[in-house]
Amino acid sequence: MSEPATTNAVYEDLYNLPENMIGEIIDGHLIVTPRPTRGHADAAASLGAELVPPYRFGRGGPGGWMIYHEPELHLGQNILVPDLAGWKRERFSTPREEHRFTVPPDWVCEILSPRTARDDRMKKMRIYAQHEVQHAWLIDPIICTLEVFRLESGKWLLLDVFSENARVRVEPFQEIEIDLGCLWSE
Image (cartoon, rainbow, N blue to C red):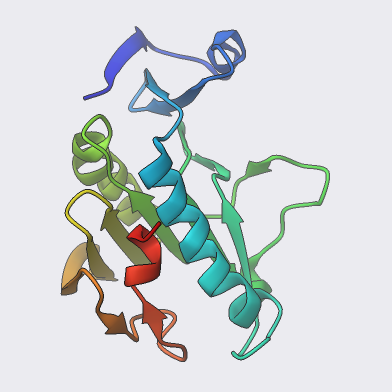
């Protein structure tokens, strides 16, 4: 589990981290975790490869989304770095030269690891709900699962859980079929 390194952290604290670490500010605490493992990175890269062509570029899908890997989200006093996040194009307003995303995404995906799962589930999901992120996915590459959530009345509703090699069509990307086996295969 990641541990808070600093209380009342400020943005400048992120500059002092080693390159092999990821820093987030959650509820005033600097949370420092190592870069993802290969399994974690494989799942994120594979999911991005499934979603970006049809949803960002309209190749085999509807287009209309901006999807990014590890964007730096500024949500109130919190600075979060989800593994993937997506905005409907009409809501997206971050200039190309800016690395801070201040408009909450429409969808986030957290790839769970033993070190991050507690913060991802308990802290970050709460913050995403407070900022009205409409969809969240939690992927566990160790047990090969995808949990799909939708925000309803300020609370997360678990829509479904899928595992292993399931082929799924899930919100907000139900127009395409995703082969979950691609997320954890070699």
